[in-house]
Image 1 (cartoon, rainbow, N blue to C red):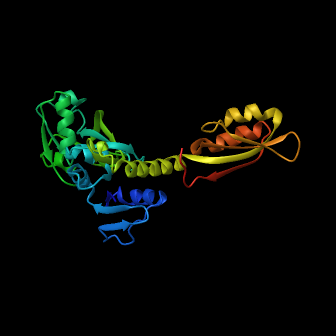
Image 2: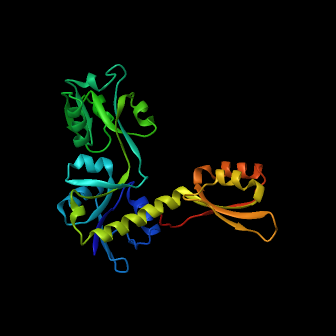
Image 3: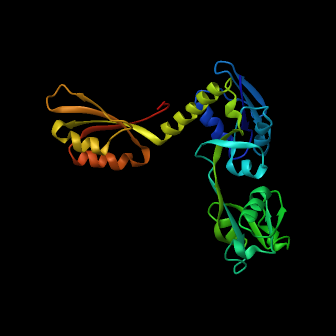
Length: 285
């Protein structure tokens, strides 16, 4: 039975459980549940603190885990990313009072406060910058005001909270993070678990594709088919079927969801009609 770690709370928890549900796996009904078994799919889920998941997976006690790229790197655990999941995206940046620093090279001799000591210390070392790193849990914006550090390193989304604290970001991003699936480094050599792991990954990849594409159906004149197919090439090629009315065909193809409205406009402009889009709930490519 495959043993998988899932975040038990925070910004990763809800989207991870939703994706697993869409992939056909049972999920817990009560937030207090720390473990459930899905016998039909031969999977056992463990609900753990997001920061601990990489450690458990690296130990070999669990086969896979869903966590953040930032948490994996910060942990220093012997685990590796095998599939990005596209949610809980974030960017890590340095920030300070105006005119404190313009780039990472200006941090030499300064103190940086962060909740992600492993990420920041590694980034500074890779850049050849000798600076001190202070670990703080929770919000780090007040570290500068209280004199604990001259610079902070934190997740930046809109930057509003930083501006409210009188800080501004500088330099290049430290890293970009998102939810990922991880496994113990080198665990792919386990031939017994590998088929189950690959099935799990295919299911999640199917959810990612289903969220990215919609199915588009429309009718068009035969003489406009080549133009229509150019607009909706599908993944391999579209399905084309003759209609009862001579000279007309029905076309079906997967198209990127974010481009669906534009494609519908373009199809209508060349004479296509009865243009429909439907959501894709699951797929295998």
